[in-house]
Length: 191
Image (cartoon, rainbow, N blue to C red; front, side, top):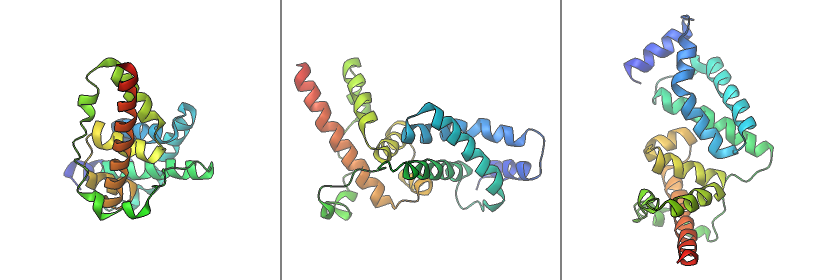
């Protein structure tokens, strides 16, 4: 935990006027991003963000500083969104076709050469990429955008989601492979 995190937590727990509002302002973008990527419904996202910060307020005394405050709040947001999807019986991840393919064999394939930003060079391809990202299952969509677009390290994503790093890498690999396949099909159709 950083000194800033400690001061912020102490201020909120000490009921310093405006401290919780500052915390919400600082982390509402992260919260919104995680939840919106998972649930994709603005009304639900708004309600779930409120629920997230209510839980943060209620449980902040349990924060022990083992990870950054940002990661802890991200974890709460992810947990709230995941529980929402589970209640609605919405699959949060695509099951692999070959379960033997999931695991150590994919760990080294995270840097498989797929350049997400390079794929966005052309506006038409960027629009197609956005559509394909939105078509991914909630888990892969969230992990992909956290890792590639928000540049959150896998270690931090693991803290946020509670998933093993290898599982995250496996989801990222599958999501990129799916995007690559669909973008190549689109590009073939465009050409």
